[in-house]
Length: 325
Image (cartoon, rainbow, N blue to C red; front, side):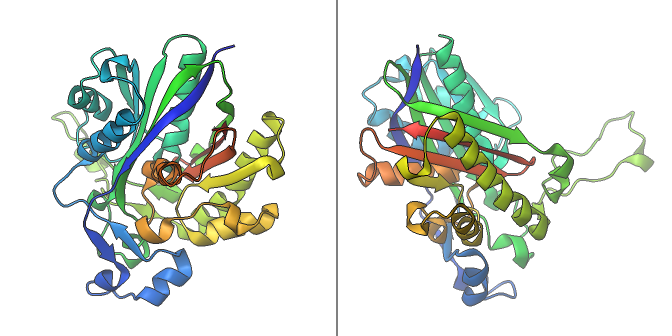
């Protein structure tokens, strides 16, 4: 049986740090209000880089530690909702930037679940021998789509990128995967793109789309707290594993209160969840690979460790993966 295994990780975050105190200078909020509701203290904001730029830097870091050459990569999947181009894809731009001339490259849009969806696709293609070495990137420049006058959303989001390299392996790696979508609730978290504009459009019926993030916080919280529990329980069951065997759970870093709620509902100590939302805020598709690389880089993950990554976000989408390191 062909397995897929994560052999390297990388991440990149912009150097500019925007603190809660900084935000309080232009919207009616304060550090105590933000931290008590979200756990976020600061976030990184891009000032001279776009989505493909930071995605490329995360990819290069992963490649550097993998022992592979760029030509060895035969699949690039880029998960993002903030690409700077409709075409070419961010994946094709990264392919060009790193010299991965033998890769099939494409983007996916699953918002905060994007990295898990990308991992699922890469694992599937490796298992049917359509790829040997896959680069999965999650990168976002959410500062482009945030309404900086809306205190309920502008405090939440940050910019960043993370990447993982998967390779075909005879050893266990990706043990079980689960993804699901709830499209009927998609309007609880949305951001518009291009409005219908052409010489034939019925102008009286055209509704301009809002290009900022719009969120129903209560609905998203309710969805996220149930989704994270369902996804974790599903990959544990499918992977014939127990929670006691899992060393860490690496959740999407959306809100400290969501993670704390899941910890209590699952009766799992909070210290088993890796949390860095205080430093980066919600970086959507980038949050899980950023966290994964931090843990890998700090030698928190040892060969044979079992970890769960779990995400939830716009679409609505959610999913999880049980991984043996």
